[in-house]
Image (cartoon, rainbow, N blue to C red; front, side, top):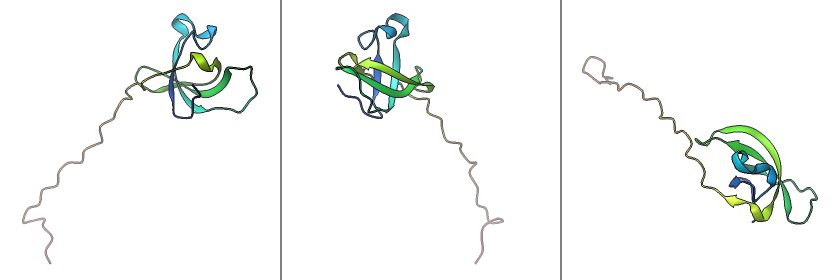
Length: 97
């Protein structure tokens, strides 16, 4: 798998030993640098996401392509738009022509 910007990945020990156990993370790719690497490995730039989908930290990671797994993006906290109070139209404040 070759990730592209916008992909959300689950990065664990299969991608690199440094992400084993409780160091696994959800990672949103923002850039795939074109740097020379060892065969099968890749540099990725992106954001570590929390369970709500908020970016916690920008990082550059070095991982094995074969160990990357697509993840479903965490449900980002959806903010409800501010509602404006309804304006009542009465005979007194109606616009007259």
